[in-house]
Image 1 (cartoon, helix red, strand yellow):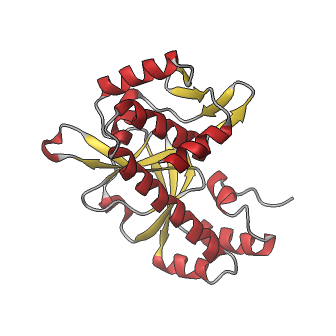
Image 2 (cartoon, one colour; image 1 turned 180 degrees about the vertical axis):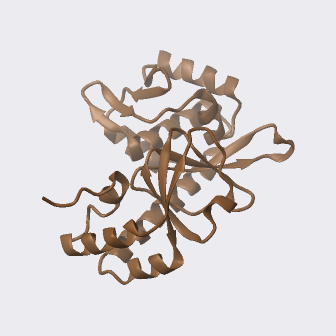
Length: 226
């Protein structure tokens, strides 16, 4: 029976030939694992020596505190199987839920890049992270907060959503406060925008999770329009 790999490792290596995936998994097994408690801030000092972070379980975000400590913005998010750059001294990493990261030091990263196929997978992962950061910045440029919320929910559904008969479910918890940090708005503004989007039949909410009541192709068209 094949050895069971951690969730995030399995997802990150899913596109590789079996021999390459086994070699890459062995390298990652020798890297430090870091457990994140939900809502606890982790600073750059927690990731010393890491060149790249792989989310194994849970969901993590990078926050940038704004001056005077009144608010922060989320510039990047990553679920299981996604990669993140370690936070800089100006950034803070949080798990939205209890999470586990694999900290990849430069020596291990060099080994991974020598495995055929793995370099491409890592490159694609970094490109995805960069694209998300660019989308986040693009969202801030829109003056209409309703449109910011709509576009962010579409992006989250496109990246992490699960398509079902009743819509596209975003499985990880997104509170009004987290969504506000993702789009650079206040919590109260996000609450009003979500109420309007629910009345319009765009989204349904259950607790801190959301279900988009649109076809999956709408998420792609929202991305193209942005």
